[in-house]
Length: 443
Image (cartoon, rainbow, N blue to C red):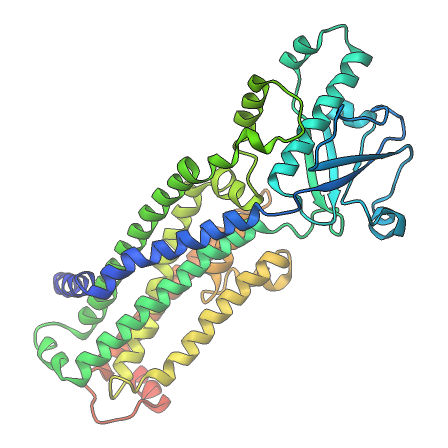
């Protein structure tokens, strides 16, 4: 193991001090943060003016919301129930952008559903919520209490407006959390491919220029293979930690200095309130004003929990696929000879991503239930399932899938060590499957 450690340090220093590695420390996080910035900004876009149809069969609101309507939100009333399908398809309702129903349940539960045709902007959502909440408060004060308006608002509960697409009223297409897990899985696949190819090129290069003959005069082939895998893996970890640090700083910068300026009181056009009340509403809604993606990043993701599992799956998946790339490098007759054998590994990585994609949209399918225990794709599927949340009593599937991956990695490393030992000193041949089978059998 001492020899493997020395080789690992040599490989680590060679990667870390390279110009490409240093560039990726900066360019990689910068690209990720730029894409996140675009997603944050794009998610905040939406209709800036809407027509809201309120179904008020009991006449609770008395056909009024605010004394003077603004340009952003216009209200219309019907004194009857209205089915979602009728609102969605009826010709007479096509002029309206949002359907809301207000009844006695809304007063007691403090929750109203808003079914939209096209996503309203964040400003419009907050304005609609505030205006409707104020009107419902007035109705409740008048109907159920002897309190003044100010006294009631000191003990009130906020109104929850649940925005849903009229074409997906049950919110069945909401899979944002699953995509977070998919991104973690994509990072695993990307880093495994990037640094796995580094293992392949390093092994094939040393074999083609005969440096490996000098090295193997002092160390065993298995020590050389494990040293390369460990050293390049350490460089991958440095890259990951650097990315994580810079992305975390960037997200903090976005929240502290870029996006809070969207909470300007100027956004509340047409809303009659004092400056103190405006400021209070802005402070209360600063975490909920953003789009769903921003809320997911800053409020819902348990980064500590996700990152811990991410590191476990990344390290195991790297060793698993690193064994493949080491084997291909040892089988290669020249530095470029083993490229044809990379294709099956790329297919396996692509299959892992496809399985993660299916896990987002059909998480309960038998294929996904089994694929989380298949070593080739369990890292991606496992991260997606973790982000979606395991149902009670099924979390043990995750450590079980990891255990299967660990056992498979151990067996594959043993097999790769045998091929590496028998193939690393073979020269003047082209990589063929017959050599692969022959070197497996040879002790």
